[in-house]
Image 1: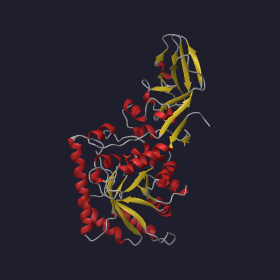
Image 2: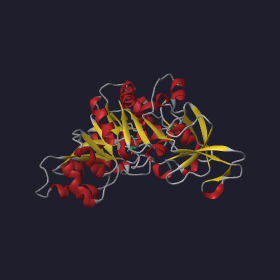
Image 3: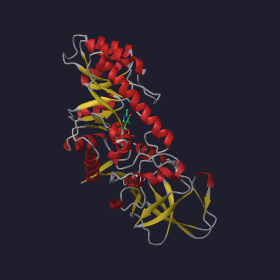
Image 4: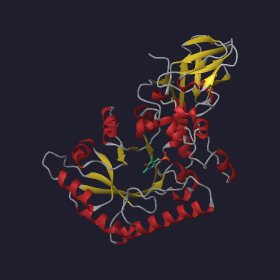
Length: 383
Ligand SMILES: *Cc1c(COP(=O)(O)O)cnc(C)c1O
């Protein structure tokens, strides 16, 4: 196996899932763990299995293919499909028994038409009615929720399993953003009431992702949909310090470490430049370690200059541009070929920074740092 690997600390995954459970005001609230984008890079199957072991009842994916991967691995629990699917995937949605978000009449009609084909299972397909209360992404207009709910309930082979919405700024702590989230929640509650008033059961009502469930416990409703916190990172401004400041405690541990090993150490004379564009030149005799990891592995090209990596408990700076498959680090005499290099990860991996720190330095979020780790990096589960 290549030496560049994503180590997956399964213990931390389980710790985080239990920590999510501890955040629930009502222990009967269900948890839907988002395992989309290959479990935020940490492995969808690994995460799904850990979640099911911890008693989680629902999982969520973004695409039908991701749902298929879960079913192939023998995962039997409810699987929500968060993102819109193509109508030619509907047959697979039924075959795999995925629960899609629906939000307009045509989607309901297309699902209904497929379910009437004789080869489809007789069992009803669970769907969740998504309401756009202010995210500006998928969802129906709140005033259409009751009409759509009725259409779903009247569809012979569809079951209204739930109603949901998604927040736009629940990871922010500014007064305006907090007011916006509360307004979204109020609109959602109204839409649910309209459905109830028309004599229908809305099913499981859910709106809170990681940020919502941590920052607004009163919005946990029947189910919460954590993603990023499962993998050990706080959603933007809703970090450990903020939570402590409002009297709550949430201890998250990073699940993924990105490591490699020094492929070679070379000595460069003063004046010798490193990598494409010649953006860095040795000012004196310098030891340069070659690492077999690059931006095609997900090491963001824009993280250099500035990125430092850990070798033997010490930080060393990346020099010159990060290439597709390699990058170079200025080291000292203590670093040898084969030494382990930690780019980010939990403390116990030997890393001296987390994906959050790389995200902060590159003007992005931990989500992007982790989901950028590409398929060619083997995931190795640490038990
Ligand atoms: C991705 C996603 C989530 C999880 O979001 P996090 O911020 O990672 O907790 C929840 N709900 C929906 C609809 C999503 O798309």
